[in-house]
Length: 566
Figure 1 (cartoon, rainbow, N blue to C red):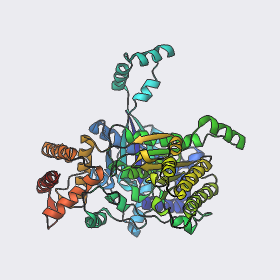
Figure 2 (cartoon, rainbow, N blue to C red; figure 1 turned 120 degrees about the vertical axis):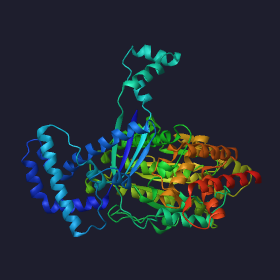
Figure 3 (cartoon, helix red, strand yellow; figure 1 turned 135 degrees about the vertical axis):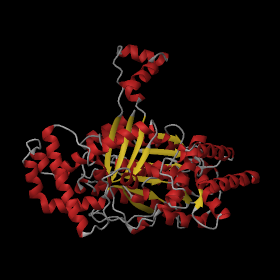
Figure 4 (spheres, one colour; figure 1 turned 60 degrees about the vertical axis):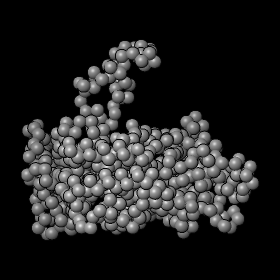
């Protein structure tokens, strides 16, 4: 089994460390130079040494946790790391003078220990709790099915024999399972951080959501995730040579990635089978292909014809299934799992990606010809953005939500004697998509509630099409658990079980499954289900916090009443 591990670093601690490195560079470098174990390359970058100190501590922590969690994913927050062992530490933001001196002293101790461990060729985990609680904000661990990898690495038999076994459906999978039991797990670590600007807390978001409580699946409804995903100001250092036109800014929202507003979104989405991973893998492949088109214009044109990669993915399904949220979450994970996040803690080595969300409802204008011009305006600005980024390794994603608004079938429009304006809009969209596919590090994600209404030419341009269905029983259980844990985290429900521990109590496990079964019978979407706990709170309780047992009884009655109405 393989695991992808996304590690959010504590930014204000790294900034403090950077200041200490600047002031203590000679002392720390001399300390390292006294050790022949450390090369000159490492001396030139103190963050490299710090990485070599932090990474083993993370690996040792994950080793014990992975054995406990089996094949499921899990999260470790800074609170978890702080409370899990002796020697943990917490520094204020901003730190006091005394705390700054403490971190300064700790760095010297850690660097001295690093030299000692390297010289004596042994490991020392005595400071693991201190290191993790100091430098780590969140750790997200996600299992990644390695059966495909095992299949490709099969060494027994000739190529012809292996291929024939696959088509004959013989003992290939049994062999893989046997090999799985003896193989060790593999970890892929990605480090990231972001600056928090104007981020609403979870509690504030929950309070805001009470104003919009409704079980309907109207497309105008907003989920908790949607409401917390506000526009984020662009940092001047990210786009020093570019500015979107005001016309474009009226039609789109811009998010720099990774974004604190999208933190945890990927983990909060639950789907059947491997849908999330399949969409993520397709997006990764699309970006990699865009980077392999060649250096010269002739090579690019030739490779484009051969590869036929449009960099366009389409997600379709009923309203409320989280298609838009899934697209945002994919972009967030793409920005985190970039190559430069593998082996570096240096704040100056981060490359930011950009998410541009097009609001299709704003495209259409009452003025003749203005709608198609609006589309061209947005795409022209995106092209200028791509050209201005130079060697920046971050990607740009255009997210078009409810794309059927601007990509409806032209044949139907003509046959129904509709306005030619809708045809012009589709023509403009297709032309501009073709124009931008030549650029590196550019991808288009689209969503649709009604795939049957889309123009055939647009569908043909999609590299892959994914059907996002309503949640299964297992997904409904996970959504309920996620909602309950969020309420407990905000001290709205008591007792405040640690994240991931709710199902350890068999009583709650059975109750949640029973409630989920009735939600499945109601054919609730994920969006509607996430609103049910808030409806329950508003109808049954006047004071907070609420005992979890009482809440689950009220939640069951809420679902039952809704079932009777239908």
